[in-house]
Length: 370
Ligand SMILES: NC(=O)c1ccc[n+]([C@@H]2O[C@H](COP(=O)([O-])OP(=O)(O)OC[C@H]3O[C@@H](n4cnc5c(N)ncnc54)[C@H](O)[C@@H]3O)[C@@H](O)[C@H]2O)c1
Ligand SMILES: [Zn+2]
Image (cartoon, rainbow, N blue to C red; front, top):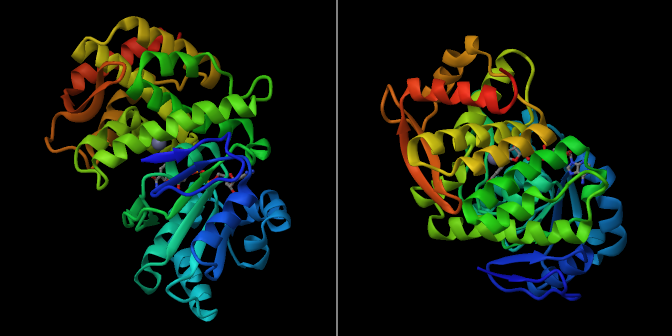
């Protein structure tokens, strides 16, 4: 995978395309021109309509001329009804097979728009413009699209590479701090999958206090996106090596499921931050990961994300949520992606519930809960 640098004033396209630039309107116009000036549709949610679109409409001639499709914000609206409404608007306006859909938004918009575009007339082109840090570093790259269905997240979807992704930091100023931190947890995950240098750089960087330095964030973001892209390239349909990107997520999904059950939902990235601490503790126990790394991460997470209180009374509940995770093949053990060293993930590590409970105890100590 190749990239264009943020230094570039007039981005050119290298396929498959991930362009890093804070000249987004120019990048859109240049891409639409290179695609032969097809009819353009822009999908946004009500928040990106308010915060992002005025600038794009004023500065991109392709966006100014495009047909707008607006969808509701919030993950509960990543559903069949919203998908069907997008198909209907494309169909009512006679969108042809050579149309292009530009997704302007967070992961909701790229997941929903990606699926709509992959299926409308058996597939039209997609350009993703991520407007949240989480979407920039994760959701907009890698070709996974989905809607939630039958009460299950991301139950229906396809793999479909966008034509291009334009990654920038220019829209992040209107994101609440919690959203920025939530996205930043995924950068830390990529750092753990890459190298000690990348991890140290990320742990010494403040994404919120004082206001983040946009240029510095662009640099770490660019590195991080390319780490994800490297894993995706080796295993696009997520059969094996791409499982490395699940680091922290088995625990995170259990924390999120528990949060939903007790009606106190946790932001995904916060659950990932706590999940990373827990899975690094397991990595130390099972694979001998250096405990200095575990301590360093726990300190960073505690300072920036606080601690999710795993009281002993909910140990079994969390383990039950993990056991129900589709990734588990054995009824007793739970499957994790763990780390032998920073940059050396080991997929499909099976861990017993007793060992997981020991990890919960260590987490309580490290996160100053005990
Ligand atoms: N496809 C993948 O590989 C992948 C990976 C990770 C997450 N996801 C999916 O992504 C979604 C989560 O992504 P998200 O956190 O970006 O959620 P989101 O798209 O729901 O955005 C979060 C909130 O921020 C608002 N928003 C977006 N851009 C803004 C801006 N610039 N300023 C102010 N507000 C803005 C949105 O309207 C929304 O209210 C979930 O549906 C998740 O399943 C997909
Ligand atoms: Zn995640």
